[in-house]
Length: 534
Image 1 (cartoon, helix red, strand yellow):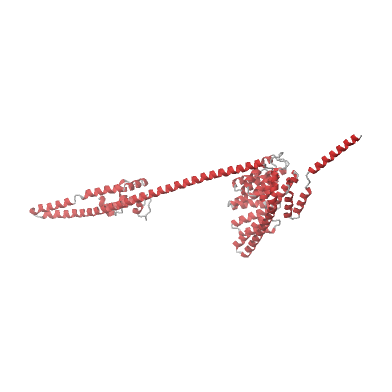
Image 2 (image 1 turned 180 degrees about the vertical axis):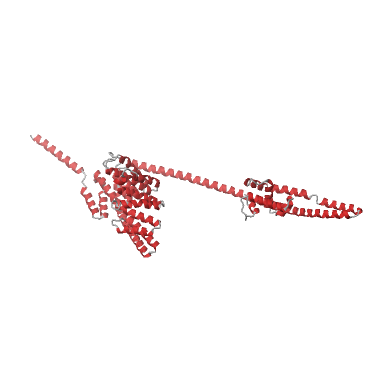
């Protein structure tokens, strides 16, 4: 009997110890602490509420998985509310990583991550998570699910717009606008999307089209989506302003200011735009008032954001090292991460070295090319100077021969007179006079040959000029090109007539024919035009 009682007592003792151990190992519930933080936030004590949430995460192992998931979600939303977007994104990642039904629904929480990535300006990542939601929304069965699909299209369009992907933004906006019965079933969403499309046209400077679309948003969302209505008022006023309808722009902004429930962002835009309008209208006092309101409101927002960020950073610095425990990264994974970063840094150094080498080679080749070009131009200048000098010498020679030719013609005229006089002389003196004339003829006999020799020299010097002239103006005849060569040498029509044994009037007509074949104005000098042919 005693043995039986001892066995029963031993069994009870083991049961008590087992229950005590289970109780000792169980985690305390922090449900009341979470609700207390929510209550503190609801009373407007945002900084105290954030501190309470962070205190819960001081030892995250004390929280159950569900509690940690809830705290991460609450904290990310609260930090987002006070514009601490980077910290909000980090907590949102933790929230997503331990989501209770993440395995059953892989894309759960994508919209939340997209929201925080967008807030931090990481629009590519935001678009990635937004688009991952679309396949799961296509098979909608309810009114709300269809609205979620259309709203997702609009959000993708707006985020694409923020990411400067204007074509993509337009595609997704039109997915909403062109959807069946969207206008009748979702007028507010339709107006919001049309307004966003109008904003896209406004950014591209098409203010007429932007005004047309934004007015639709203004009409549809007056009593549906208030923030869209307010943004539409600002958009319409902006379009009127750029279309020089200042009074219409002013009246639209007055409608905005008279409405209630305005957010900070459109209010700032409204004050700034109204200040510009009043300045254009000459109402400098009103312009100053709105500018002061804008500055005061801007400073207030900046000061508030700075204060909230300082508070969040103050409490999150120490807490973040404990939150990292939730990631459960092993030393091996950490070492691997560091090795990858080191390898990536090494690759970047190699790429940078190659880039520097390529740039140096390009610069070296560029300088070599420039030096070769300078040498070529210098050689060309020397050749041009030599050619110019040779042309001047030949011009002087030709001028001299032109003078001799004139003397020759005078000599012929004088000889004719002397022959007429000889006929009148007695027979005894006639032979003596004839011998004197023969001697004078011999002295001038070489003039024609010298002129022909000089003409060959001129043709040789002008060979490159004739080639360029023929390539540029193939309608010119050989005689006309030769005449152009003499004009480049600055010979007068009289000198050319002597050289070519034609009348000055013939030279004048030839010059007129050449001018008709060249692209030259009536007032432009023909010799100057020919000298500038390259």
